Amino acid sequence: MEKYDVIVIGSGFGGLISAAFLSVEGYRVAVFEKENYAGGLCASFKNGGYTFDVAVDAVGAMREGEILRDILKKLDIESQLDIICLDPIRRNIFPDFTIDIAGTAAEYKETLSKLFSSEKEGIDNLFSLMRKIYKQSIAMIFSGENNDIRAYYDWLGKPFSALLDNYLTDKKLKAVLSSYCNYLGLPSSRVSSILVVNTLMHYLEGGAFRIGGGMQNLIKALVGVIEKNSGKVFWGRGVKKILTNAHRATGVITEKEEVFQAKHIISNIDLKTVTSTMFDIGEIEEEKAKKIKELEVSASFVIAYIGAKMDLNKHKVTNSMGYFSSYETMDMFNINKNISYGLSIPSLIDPVVSPEGCHTFIVYWPLSGGKEMGGKEKIADILTRSVDQIIPGFSRSVVLRRVANAKTFFRYTGNSDGAAYGWSQKAGFYTNLPFFRNIVDNFHIVGHWAGFGGGMLPVAISALKAVSEITNKKMAALRR
Ligand SMILES: Cc1cc2nc3c(=O)[nH]c(=O)nc-3n(C[C@H](O)[C@H](O)[C@H](O)COP(=O)(O)OP(=O)(O)OC[C@H]3O[C@@H](n4cnc5c(N)ncnc54)[C@H](O)[C@@H]3O)c2cc1C
Image (cartoon, rainbow, N blue to C red; front, side, top):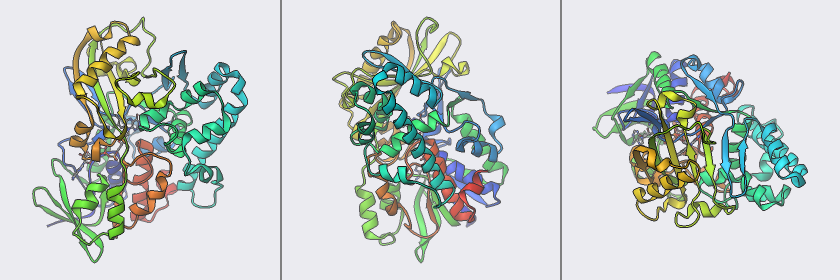
């Protein structure tokens, strides 16, 4: 029976970051991945000469001195990557105007203040609070308890709309600032203010980036670190059971009935599946297991991955865009009403992902509560035709289209209902944290089920937290 210091279940971004750090620290690490490729939602796929990222549109917090850049440096993989800065971060099209989210908070604030001049003071105050919340969230995690985290706590259980209402009055301005709520799958009146603020600010403060050639290059570099440091990745090896002894995780059994032992088990996979199927009955506290079973998961998406032969020079497009047909955030979730959607065109800034004279388009529509209303191809048809509003003639230029929906995301990642960000990102979300702690000893959760939120930055933070628990090193010491 093979023995390791640490077994990691799942090779999503969280699993790979934790495995890479631990292998560099000298731990004998094994990663078990059910698919024959790594990355989960950070994977890319190739089709007909095009390379598509499965999910991620923009990676935040990668500017010099920011967390994800520090991680790349610490793992010595920065120089292997083509890190492309997005400026503007996004272009959002609303019924009455188009507005760019510029590359910095100062520029974005100025754009908003010009467009909504009567709200300038409120905008200034709102942005200084949002900066405070972002900085306090990071400081709390990396430098312990001695920080002033009052702004963070003041807004912890409140929805984003409450924060906007505190500073602003204009309905259109509030809709503009709520654009990220849609991608988190909830209206601003329900979504956690902390999660929206940190999503927006980790791009504005930390920069927004793409990885040249696709996210898979970052994933490949992380696997390289693990293997270079004597770690092992087992491909096509789903884990079906976690072994325990006296309330302590001790190993795993794979789908192929192989048994592996380890001193620590890290789970990078859907926590509902883990707690309901992978432990022996009675191993997990009943109340905890029940609560986790009942918790809501986040939204999923219908996504059309499209290759099209066309010249974009005469069109006003950027790498990353949002089309909003109204100022009502809930309208975005109604395919039969005024469809709104996100559109990425990665080949605009990274030509290697498409054949010459062609472009990659990723059109995404968030599903609230996993409800799809109609088949995925029908929705993709509507989305494809809708892009004609931004790029006239687009639908006639399509040469290739693949479509994913919640079922696809579930099939490839095992995330319940194809959840894009793990748990529902609603206000009060952080009160669930105690249920994810102390499930059994020497068992650690990383990834978007760990309770820090969805997206690459929270996922990386969860991985560093697990590494800190195992190595007894402080989070700040791991980062720098
Ligand atoms: C459409 C979409 C767009 C997004 N856009 C962005 C964005 O622009 N920026 C951003 O920061 N975030 C974005 N996100 C969120 C982000 O992609 C995720 O939060 C993050 O990638 C989740 O990483 P993870 O480590 O939790 O693992 P996951 O990506 O969920 O990976 C889990 C891994 O575990 C494996 N696995 C599952 N079960 C088993 C098992 N039993 N045994 C072994 N292996 C198993 C899976 O195959 C998979 O490889 C987006 C998500 C979606 C869906």
